[in-house]
Image (cartoon, rainbow, N blue to C red):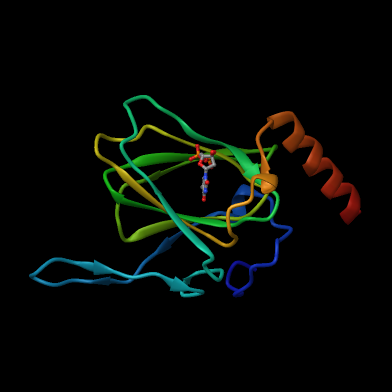
Length: 153
Ligand code: TYD
């Protein structure tokens, strides 16, 4: 369950398990503040944070899945689209508010596109960076899904 605080890889490789999460917003005349903590409401213990910025117009990021890593995306500034694909279905999630995040389980193929000028995308991740956790070939991703289904039969 995404509600459980776990960094275990989960067998949740359906785009229906990706979800928008509303983040706490502390309004203030001096400017608003939003906070994320491990497990609240990010549904995993945060091991890593990175951000994507200075994206040239028309560029695409991502284009891969992770065996184990779970991620949580926030458009800190501006907007971008996250395209999710689980081998069966595809959906586009537009992020354009700094108080909404998108939770994406492991084993979901994703790419990011349609970045607005000066947008900043925050990504918090459940695992440290590991090149071997990436699946960068879509056909290999489909093979990995089939293997996983076979193991779970
Ligand atoms: P990548 O994850 O492929 O970028 P994106 O999915 O946004 O297109 O990473 C791009 C490069 O940055 C790649 O050489 C790996 C490196 N990188 C790290 O060293 N540490 C990290 O935490 C991340 C996310 C990437």
